Image (cartoon, rainbow, N blue to C red):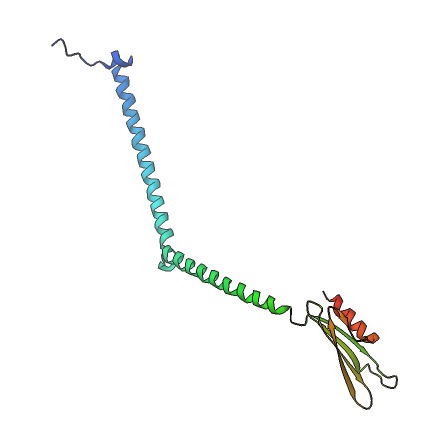
Length: 171
């Protein structure tokens, strides 16, 4: 039985076997303490997770998330509809009267109260008209003059020019 060699820790490690066993025992105790600490932390984490997933009033977080995703899809589709409607409004905006100029005046000296007026209405392209209403004792006379690109082919009265200038300044 010469081939069996007695295992001797002191020969292998150079540390007495009593100290080596005490060291291993201490390591086992430290590992057990770490396992208990990790178990307590895991229990707290599970408790927090359950509370988080249950949510308020018994609703689950999954239900709330699904509801929010559906709401986001509704908002996105609504946004597309709104974009189309806004574009339609912008397309029609060129044809609406956006610029206004109004001048009130006395057409005749015997009439007071500035009952006559010149009203200029222009669109974005400065196309439109000037409406001139002249009030006298015999009645009210209205005239309309077409405006193309901010100009009239018919001569304008001073009040009409003033109303047109007011409208052109309303950029």
